[in-house]
Length: 404
Image (cartoon, rainbow, N blue to C red):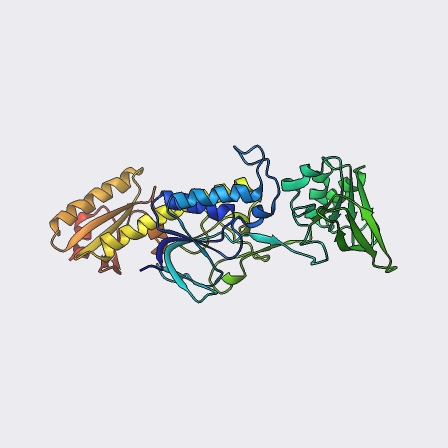
């Protein structure tokens, strides 16, 4: 079927594109669905100077290289928006805004996140031309210049202090009365002691002004209602980020209070076969290089998950005999001895049974599905359905009784 894939990736930022490269290279039939411009937030960055191998490259250029690389390995791309999911079956279903349905054995969530916008005049128009949302990405482009920061939470103050390593002067626009910041006390104390940082209290920003680049901002005092202009060459907005996970509500995917998805080291979510990468997951560093690493990890983990899924289907679900699925650990002597006993029993009953062994040192997805807690464990399947779990011991006679 044309709408059935091995791997579907939702989101076309650096994490999703990296996953597409690795998925395609692994010979997985891969589809990447992206609702906007390929590249995500990286596409809005005018210069990237910290991605390995690129001394200086624009965000759109780097993301274009990512996409070409993925396409060279056969990954397919679709411009559409995912609005619904069903992750309850082995074949996961995603539904798009254009009312198309796609199915895959594994899904990687790479929707990223977007900065919360104030939607004031000039903000969108000058984004990437002085308006910025990431100090680590863009601070160095304001070397020796005057910069404004909007916000007073942990991110605003801590990122603001980072910007002062480059800027001549940094002005923080704060909604509250003098001396009151929303950040933690330690950061506040450091900020007040920073000679490059100044604060404008009881104020908000009304407009970002400039022709091709930011030239000044208009600031409104909330107590007096008066407005004034402040010359600057850059404006950083730190009023929050919004992960693109709204479409996952009701899907069963675990998310934190802000909508970010927690994962383990393999980028696995709480649902089998579903992975999350990049800025929409809980993480420490939100950069192109870390997003690319996430995508690579998830795609490799997805490949192994699919291999286990296919092996189950081919060796167990489609078997014309009952299957003895033996979970063991190849690094444990007792576990190996038990496995050998089961092989002997299978030979005695080879007309009725075949044996499939799962080494828990390297494979775990099937074990998690059937809630295998102890080793060794033996589950009997008939046409893919679990019919019995053996009481495991080294007593061969007792095991034979359970097989009759």
